[in-house]
Length: 195
Image 1 (cartoon, rainbow, N blue to C red):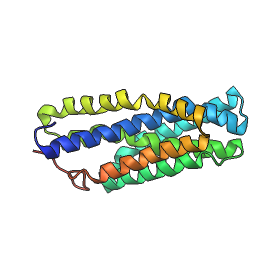
Image 2 (cartoon, helix red, strand yellow):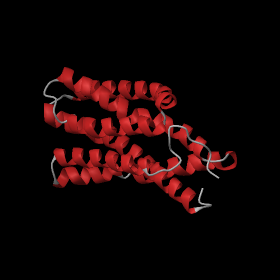
Image 3 (cartoon, rainbow, N blue to C red):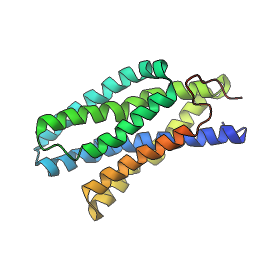
Image 4 (cartoon, rainbow, N blue to C red):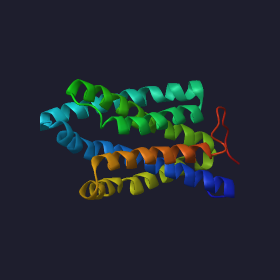
């Protein structure tokens, strides 16, 4: 995973992408229900309905991302999903009624978590067979370890700043992931094992 400078960069870049993936997920599932309750004055039941719509969107995204990845390649697939996630998280601040919130929540769930299904496939193609399982585990677990702290960061931001700043923070994370993804040399429409 770190045998050459290019492989080391690829590994660290994929770790950054995994951190953002997990941070975005925890931001959506841990804090957004509370923020939506405040913004739209939702009850706990209303917040649960929003979360259910988001989870349905996430499931649909994970079921379809592999097909999209195969059709248009990883750069375009991840690029589209990362841009849509960055815009979608910001757009979540705009709904003023429950039907709109449910629709936007499902779309944000679709894009923000749908791409999670592609990491295993991409990592498997970017590393030789003998380190493939290790690469998947190390990259995704570093993502979980560091990305999990996003709940703390978002809580701190909510205590000191506005909900809009939290949304900008999460959107910015997705844009950072996009920029990092574009620098991974082996991640092209047709990609091969690294040597």
